[in-house]
Image 1 (spheres, one colour):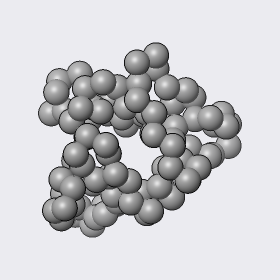
Image 2: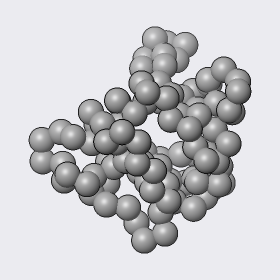
Image 3: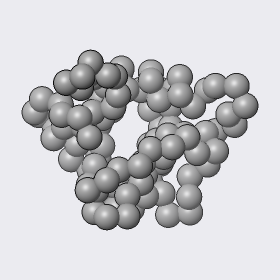
Image 4: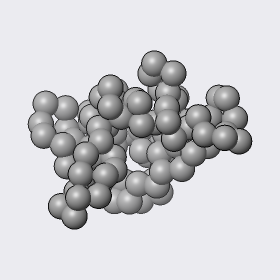
Length: 99
């Protein structure tokens, strides 16, 4: 199962609690190409087949392909080589790398 760091939980909570965002909204992670590309979006509700993770007030929705890819990963936040902040994923037990 995808593990989520406390920092990532807080960022998801901030992203999904803005003005005009429904109370049960979440961050949706999806892919259609086996995770070569992951798409992120704020979604009002999960899609019918989405896996839903609730973590301390933040919700993450994953389509089936993304859930399979992220099953043994950690979602965190960090800086890329250009100093830009964003989400990073890493295998459980290893250092994070940007996606």
